[in-house]
Image 1 (cartoon, rainbow, N blue to C red):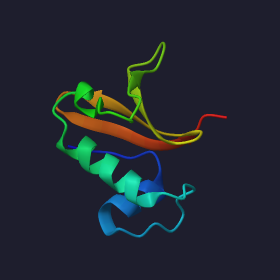
Image 2: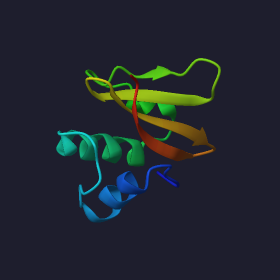
Image 3: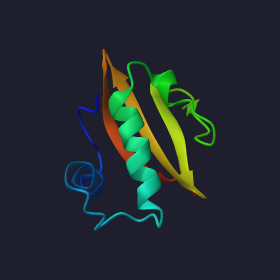
Length: 90
């Protein structure tokens, strides 16, 4: 279950469906990814085809590819996903 967000726009989209403030064109994909994360019981549950799931070096955070340079990054605390963020890698 997603417990916290770093991105206010991402939290608003997750809670209300309003994509205002999101910087990515494919908000439906972001919504599907957030649903996967919300249902996850361990980080590897986000390792789905096309998501390019990987751990971030030197951190206890993970990443999945939204599109182009955009990634959803997140941490893990017990049974919950924390600090979900939408980041531009370049």
